[in-house]
Image 1 (cartoon, helix red, strand yellow):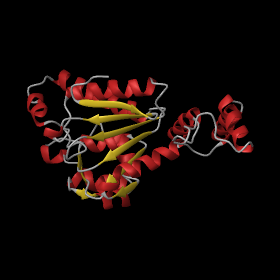
Image 2 (spheres, one colour; image 1 turned 90 degrees about the vertical axis):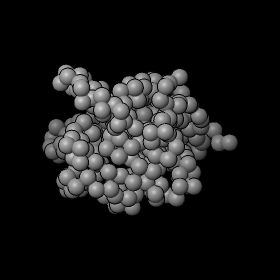
Image 3 (cartoon, one colour; image 1 turned 60 degrees about the horizontal axis):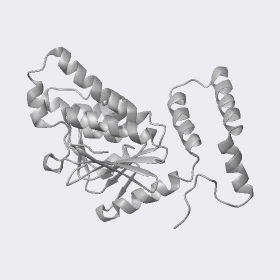
Image 4 (cartoon, helix red, strand yellow; image 1 turned 180 degrees about the vertical axis):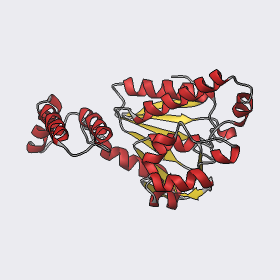
Length: 264
């Protein structure tokens, strides 16, 4: 696919989506949002893609909103502002609900909307020099469309602090509060992400998608009779699938399942 603000590639079953506006630290505008939505939908629909990685070219992952776009937005009508916000909200939902595992490859600043992109992904790996900031209140704004994902990622108590203070925090703090899952030296970023992807592709594609749906459906649900019936039904259905039969047969036959890429 050819994009104005992105670079995409499919490499060994991994769909790579690169934010490619290094001159503005990959800041988001309406074009970036539209192209990200299209790129994710294309990767989700590509049978050759087992997982999706979101990354940024240049010195930053994503510095938040593009200043020129924000300047133009001052002249937008309420309807135009709402339409733009809805497009960003739908993009984040697309990433969050992707049936394929998503990994954020983070370096440099991940500010404001950039934090929303990270939070919407399943797994986030950041370099030790990465920086994070929910800067919206300093502009008289609120982190509204990204809030469902950021709050889930860092938890309500931390969100109360960082939504209100707009302070910059580092990768060590992001890892401590659970916003990112792993940190590494800048030179080790690709190796660390590749190691995670190597583990992800060991899982059955349908099982990975169902595991993601399971997490979304279980969070906050009371452990009642309905939940017990639901989880038992899900397991029974998966056990009867062709993928599960293949996985169990491969285990007992001491071979790799059909979905696992051959070793180089």
